[in-house]
Amino acid sequence: MRRRGKKRLVKYLVINIVVWALAILWILPFLGIFMVSMRPFSEVIVKGWWHIIGHYTLKNYLDAWSNPSSPLKVGFKNSFIVTVPATIIPLFIAALAAYVFARFSFPLRTMLFIMLLVIMAMPQQMTVVPLFFMLNKIGLYDKLEGLILIHSAWGLAWITFFLKNFFDTLPREIEEAARVDGASDAHIFFRIVLPMSLPAIASVAAIQFTWVWSDFFYALVFLVSPQNYVATLQVATMKGQYYVDWGLLAAGSILTMSVPLILYALLQKYYVRGMVGWTVKG
Image 1 (cartoon, helix red, strand yellow):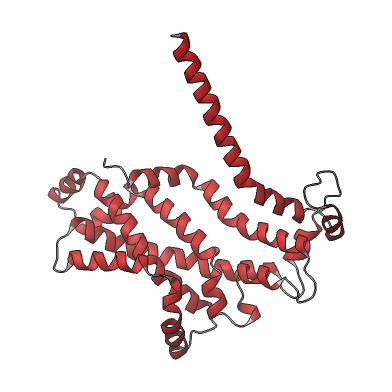
Image 2: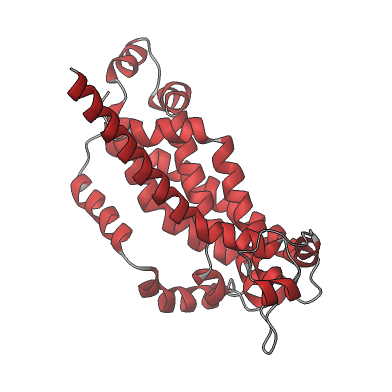
């Protein structure tokens, strides 16, 4: 018994040491960026970010927020204009499609679902040229509305796949009982299925919001005018041609990444339940 207890203790200690070592390695780059963002440029260049003792200031954050050439406050406004509808629109449409895939049989159902999987596996780079011509033809190139349309369409496939798997785990007995009582399919979906699916919906909303907010590739390709730049583009343009203020870039990066982090913290409980729920049959 004592040997088993010692083995368990040793195993417990080894696992904790490995986990904490990996956690430190994982957070070290973020710690470096945070330290650079809080210190003057001259101090970072001379001493490096790893010197804990030094002069700390919020000047880099204020300069990044109201930068004269690349104001992050404008980027935040544009990012919210793009991200919020690009999260709500595909979530609503994909929820309807996922429920149809999960509960109804119709011709070409399997083929259509396979097409969703194919779209999910398609890299973004393959869609740039046709999307450019499409947006240019309909007059949405270099407009936030065009970026909303692209992100909404791109999110439909994976959100439908995610929610369809979650709907499969919900008990059908409740829906059948409501149908016997005379409830319509729309009533069952909006009054029964959606309330039961709040964890999955919160998970999808958090992931889609983070994906759209953090996007740089599509924004770089389809936005040209500086007044339309989203937050990720504004941070990139803070880098000068002959002079790079690393503290300014670090502060802008942390401000930009703080929005998805705050959203995740607010939805953490639902996020974890949703991610676990659709992978385990209830």
